[in-house]
Amino acid sequence: MSRDLLPLNALRAFDAAARLQSISRAAEELHVTHGAVSRQIRQLELRLGLALFEKDGRGIRLTAAGLRLRDATSEAFERLRETCATLRRETEERPFVLGCPGSLLARWFIPRLDRLQRELPELRLQLSTRQGELDPRSTEVDATLHFAEPPWPADMQVFELATERIGPVLSPHYGNHAQLLRAAPEALYDEQLLHTTSRPQAWPQWASAQGLSPQRLHQGQGFEHLYYLLEAAVAGLGVAIAPQLLVADDLANGRLLAPWGFIETPGRLALWAGQTDRRSEQLADWLRNELA
Image 1 (cartoon, one colour):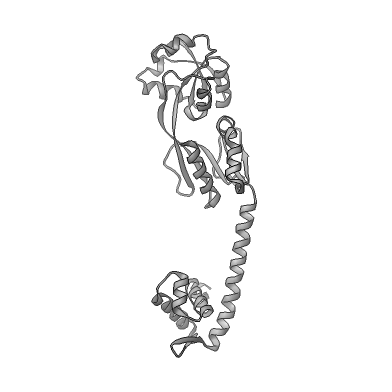
Image 2 (tube, rainbow, N blue to C red):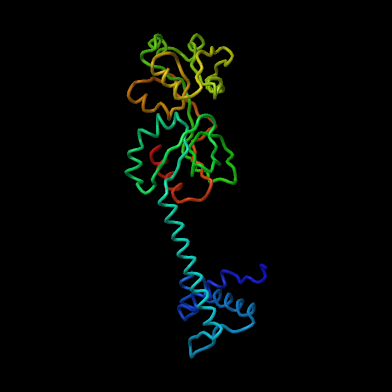
């Protein structure tokens, strides 16, 4: 069956030349050379076993067979253009569904949502959050925003946005905060440390980078979700380990303090998209600018 199909590039070259009545002008429209268009048309003529153009003075004109093929290609390409335009319009008019962890959504994304909607109104953003692990390959979302470590899968578009940095944070209302602000990181050996059950490696990762012994840390209250962990820290219930991005606003307004700073992890905040979509690229550009 495939041997009966004519090459699409050759048909495009013929359609342009037939419509413009010129090989040179067809080459300009298609951004190829005069010789390339001539070769494509010659390929069609050889496949069909007949001439499609004949010389007309210094120019060319369609043969009877060429006229019949022109009518067919003109109609076919016009239908293709209309269908593609309809598909693009339908894609742009439907909401862009973004999957996002609840903690990132609540603490970073929502405070910036109004600005995003003003600057990218055509995005028609719809936010989706799930309990548990997010699946970037879910057919229910157009893209997923979350922290992960490279390498990235070859079957997805992954836009790297920012390096992940984590560190201990505590509230000015925490009973021992005054002493801790003046203390070395070793003072955390004597504290009950808040943590999330979904990321038990966070405290040991930070401690090792500081030259501390992870085994000497005392894990205190655990929380299933990072959002609850950070709310507990803001309430003064203990020292929490948190991504810098998610506590940046709290640090800026003094709700939280970070006496020992943050360390870089192998993780990256990235936007994952399952298919090529102009809106994913637009959102990734906006996110990079906002994070910068």
